[in-house]
Length: 117
Image (cartoon, rainbow, N blue to C red):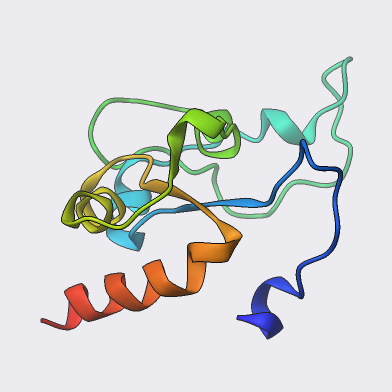
């Protein structure tokens, strides 16, 4: 964990690090980005775009961009205790589940156990 996300650091009390955990098959099915986040206010590229095509949701919805849905996190979404619904949220929900960094490692262990069984 410490190698992946770095050590915790002190923030103002109003700020906390939250993580959105989405099961990869679900993420690949619903995520889409037309790269608009890579453009400036005039529509020019801030950096050259990747050579591969933009990512379109594979769920057949035609969604071309929903990056903000994954990036925007509300404190109302944060899981404060573990129940089976928390694990199911990570494994089944389009936007997965949001967890406080203090509970992240425990949730990931539970999810990995659920996947293995």
